[in-house]
Image 1: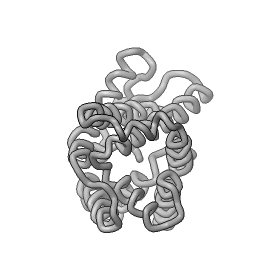
Image 2: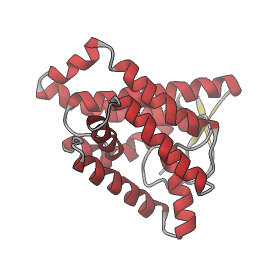
Image 3: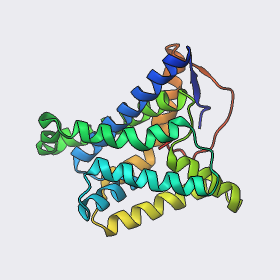
Length: 222
């Protein structure tokens, strides 16, 4: 994957980039959810948990992210303010967006429109990842756990990430989460979407390249 960009500007700009990135990330998740064509592995788990508890989809996202964050802390994973913001704000933004009637009505549209919604959602998640990662306030809860597990197990980061994604997918599917075309599309396209967002932010001058190479299993910091 391309090296993550670093947003130009001071602390205020980086905070704005963090919040905007998390909002866009949430909007992308909602778009994929309303497409009804299948969710990303972690959102399959979030949906499955929400169907078996009083938690909303967004609240389940927060609860699982906090559990992962605590697990990472227990293993002495690096936790930044962006890690905590990721765990809380994505779920909060999701529930906020799902309170808008026009948003929830998207799931009633034709198959063609819902397919467009699916791919648009993946693209928006990619862009949100660029803004969020570029803020440089810390990895998301799942990436923090991934990094510490890879360090302790000595397995490659991509392999550890695949294992975590696979476990989330299997458990979520068993709980009734939606698996389908969207799940496959997300797995294949999210890496290029994130990398493309890095290129775009650098191209328009909002970010500068860090000059570092990363291996996050071609997934966003989520």
